[in-house]
Image (cartoon, rainbow, N blue to C red; front, side):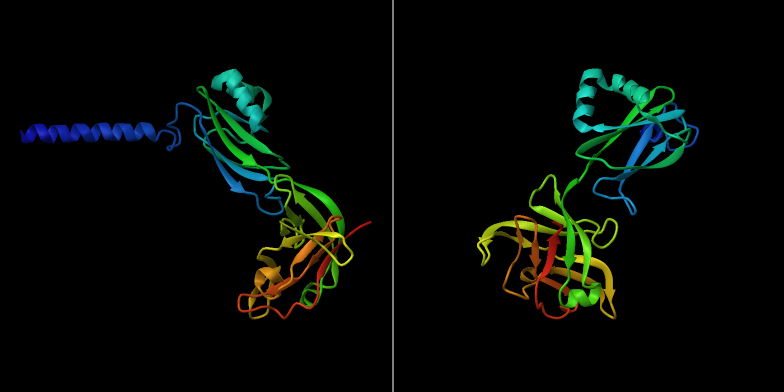
Length: 277
C-alpha cells in the first residue's frame, strides 16, 4: 500500500510538472513553438500628452519572426472582428498594419501612439509558427479649444507667478461641464475646473454660471513648506462667495493658494480670464 501511494505521489508530481512546463511555454528563450506578443500599457509621460497619447511595451517570444501593429477605432475593430473572425482579423492586421522594427525573437519594443481621439483598440499580431493576436484599449480624453486669452493673477498669485500669462481655455468633449486651461503650468500640466448647475445674474443682468476649482497641485514649491496647491476659495472655505464664468467664457475666480500647513495669505480679489476679442 505504501509503495502504491509513493508511486502515485510521484506520478502526480510528474503530471503537475508537465502541466507547469506547458503553461510556461514562452518564458524560456528558444523553447517557444508559436509566436506570441504580450502588450503592457502605460500612462504617457512628458513630453507626451496623457489625454491623447498612450505608451505600450510589446514583448515577443523566441518563436516570433515578425510582428505588426494596427490602431483603429474600437467600433471598427469589433465590426471587423465579427465580419472576418479572429483568424481573418490577424491576416488583416498583417496586411494593413505597421511592421514593428526589432520584433524578432524574444524582444521588448516600446511604442508611443499619439494624437488619438475617442475609443481605440491597439492590435498586435505576432507571426511565426502561426499567428497570435493581442489587444489593448485606449480612450482618449479629448478637448476642444473655446477661447484664447489672458489669465490675470491677483494678490498672492501675482506675487508667486507674475501679473498675467497667456491661456488657452478648453472644454472636455465628453463632459461639457469640465474645463481646463491647457498646459497652464507647462506641457501636460493643466488647471481644471468644473461648471455647476447653479446659474445667476451679475449686477448688470448678465448670466453667470458658478464654477468650482478642485484642489490641485502646481509644479512649484514654497520655501520650507513644499508644494504650492490651489482651489477656489469656497472649496477651501476661506471665502463665502463663489467663482463663476460668463457665457462668453470670461471667468472670475476667487483663487486660494496654499501649502500643506496653511493658506498663503487671504483672498483679496478675483483672478480673471479675459478671452481675446
